[in-house]
Length: 113
Image 1 (cartoon, helix red, strand yellow):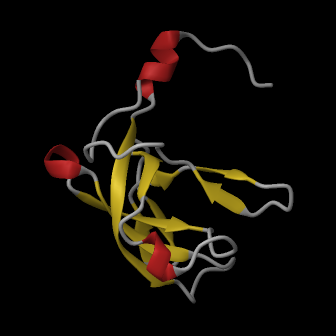
Image 2 (cartoon, rainbow, N blue to C red):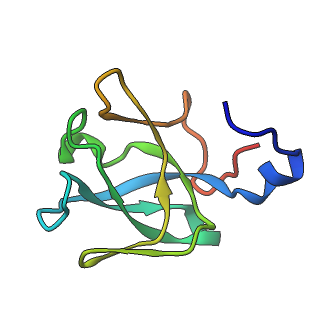
């Protein structure tokens, strides 16, 4: 378990829900990954992300899926892709990533509380 944080620390991490509107192959990535475009609603807009989620997801099934992402990290250059958000997930028993999501549809851009 990690060190204890305060609620104020948690509030500084801006986790929002968004809908994947485009999923593309990312053959230039060192580890298998996809390039995602995620719609976070009118306040934040669309953002790009790279995600190592090729084991459990096909490109076709990702489009339209709601995901959680940290939107207030600085962008990272990953090869030719500028990843603007960190798409969240969990490792399964083999180390493959399973996306974090919501159980019911919610408006894009809503903040985790």
